[in-house]
Length: 119
Length: 108
Image 1 (tube, each protein chain N blue to C red):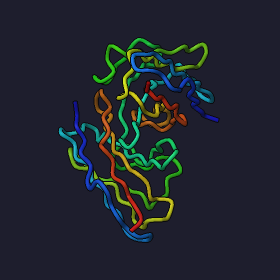
Image 2: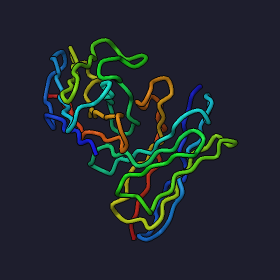
Image 3: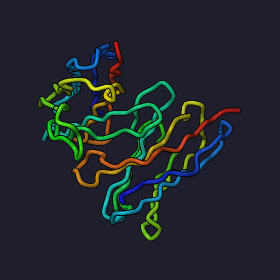
Image 4: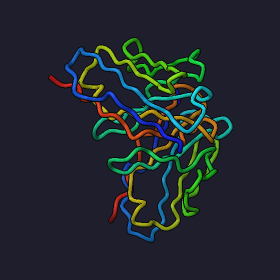
């Protein structure tokens, strides 16, 4: 079964750091681009970052550039999002997602990991 | 960045009615690289439509997508109780992969 499972969410103080993980199974992880998308409470979906299958190409939304780092370990079939200098505006449900069977569109999503930035 | 504007913000309809959701892009989307997603409370988004008009695997045929260039539409021909949710369009022509702000389809 194709599956993405996020972990690592939680409560963190402003200015703090957190690392999210997304464990993939059921497909050849190293062959696919992976993305992070977030949804703040009461707001819409916002694309955060992506990384190419071999890890050679990454990009970020302006709102997280310089603070967040996306990476992957293809030997462990795991995607990561290192989040530094967190602020209340980063409070959101974070989803990993990927275009597997369909070019470009995200046809597989994880269940999400909640990040709350608060003192 | 490509900006996607969805309208209306909220659609109040009854089961069995037809829903028409709009998504307008700030520039033409080559190859119609536009997708529609459905999201229900407490769930991850689900892909409905890709390439502006192709249904994803397992999506009922009451969902249809149309449009090209800058104007796109998601139509739900007859609303079922499980269709009341928030719907997002997304472009995958270029990075950042922007989403529209969403249209909430609520029970009237």
